[in-house]
Amino acid sequence: MTPKMLLLPILLPAALAVVLLVIPRTLRLVRNALALAGAAVLLYYGFVFFALKDLRFNVPWLGMGIDFDLRLYHFSSFILLALAGFLILITLYSTVKMKDAPRAREFFAYVFLTAAFANGAVLANNFVPLVFFWEGLLVTLYGLITIGGRPTSGRTAVKALLISGFCDFSMILGIGLLWTVSGTLTMSQVSVEPTGLAAVAFVLMMIGAAGKAGAMPFHTWIPDAAVDAPVTFMAFLPAAFEKLLGIYLLARISLDFFKLRPGSGLSVLLMVLGAVTIVLAVLMALVQKDLKRLLSYHAVSQVGYMILGIGTAVPFGIAGGLFHMINHAMYKCGLFLSAGSVEHRTGTTELKKLGGLRKEMPLTAFGFTVCALAISGVWPLNGFVSKEMVFHGALESGYTVFAIAAWVGAIFTFASFLKAGHSVFFGERTREIPAVKESQPAIVVPILVLAALCILFGVYNKLPLTLFIQPILAGHVEAGAHLDFTSHALDIFNPVALISIGCLVLAFLLHRHGFLKSGRKPYLASEPVHNLPVVHKLYDLAEARVFDPYEQGVKVLHGLSLVLYKAVDRPIDFVFEKVVTVAGEKFTAILRKAHNGHYANYLAWCLAGLIIVAGAISLLAK
Image 1: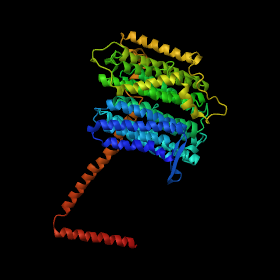
Image 2: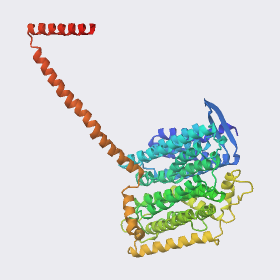
Image 3: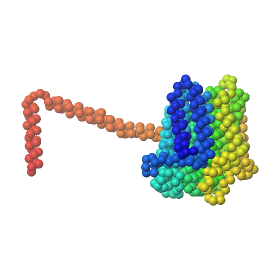
Image 4: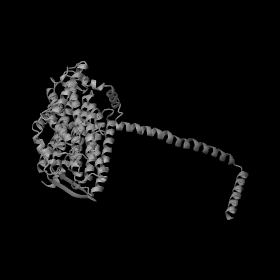
């Protein structure tokens, strides 16, 4: 295979995006077939590139070290394959879910354009092409959210654009500093100690990666998008593509571009960010009463485990964070698709209105249950394995507090999904929703495929760990370091795993207590936590968006604009509209009286002027 073939994952979806956009709505079947065929070709080449693992395409571009440089190696080929896999599942799902959407053509075009930019960002081996592809994702992010068609979709799209744009701007600044320190823009040639200016570069680039992945405090657009954007968008970008891209870049920053040391200040910074994201986001997820919003907060919370694992800077923790990246993309995508299946048949995702759907939608219920158990870390599913690796890594780093934070997150994660599953599928059947039937195969198949992968990657975890994760760390750890990540993966009798199981038992008891106390209403099972004296106030402030940096920033700008309006704009208008105007009118009135048409007056003015000029000249002559 020639190096030019690396252009195919970029050019093919970009070309398909244009074609899908211009195909008339009346040719929907042609559009769907073409989209599925294109996604299948990308998946095929994903496997081909993963088998190659070593290819580079480099042509001179703008000079000064700015080349169009693409590089395929194990890590990039793994992400490329994962992106292609999620693309074909989302495309198949969307052929039914987006069938009647008025802007379906735009949706498919944005999806494939996103795939083109994402593939380009993964393959980029020069920071300038990386920035180009990375920023292109802002365009498709904005477009996909607006397709939701709700009155607030545009506002949410702007919010997502501004927050993501800020993170991207930080990343660009970090790249500029890293270029100054390293002297090169070729990514494979950069490896510096994160001290001084390089440490600042690390933090700025970390913001860019964490923002793309949806970590706190750059997450606040995601719950809004869960309501305002199509559910297919949530499964596609926040659940899958953005997690893969953000954590991929964060891993490159921590493993390749900078030499992150265990116990260093930057390592602790990452672990703090991860722990805070885990706990705060899961507490918000716990009290949600809409299934999509509940899932959106979990999409944020689970990023914390990935960041925490990478932040430990120890092989076991990093491997756990990377494994959790792909695991999360699978089960969170499956969960959003399950929510979309429920919405497709019932027309709502409000927990209060749902219940008892397992008999009418058994396949959706099965897929949701498997994915919910996986994200909760229930043995022997994939989430159990990756979370255990993160717990072990946190303990190995020497900071037990971060492992405790991760366990707290595990408790409330399981409690959240007990509440969600109980409310939607396993509770009493409500009368608000008429009888429904299972969704079409195009909707159910992607859910079942993802559920099957959750089982496969858990039971046979040695396969993904050895095939995908272990080679990423080869060459990035000290010689002789332990790289066999499968030895503890299914051992549920070690102390760490027993603590995790204890957390799941506590979560079950917490849900049962809330369920019974609420009068056997599962959607209110979290109210005992919600109504705790101090916690309730904090929840009220959070619901009022007091802790949302974007919303508070908007209020500050509104206040500043009001101050400037009253202190600057109005006084200036007063000067020009009142003072200048009145003075001009008075002066004009004086001149009008002086110019009365009498020749003698005009002659007197002329003589007076001559006398004044002559006097002035004589004074100057002295």
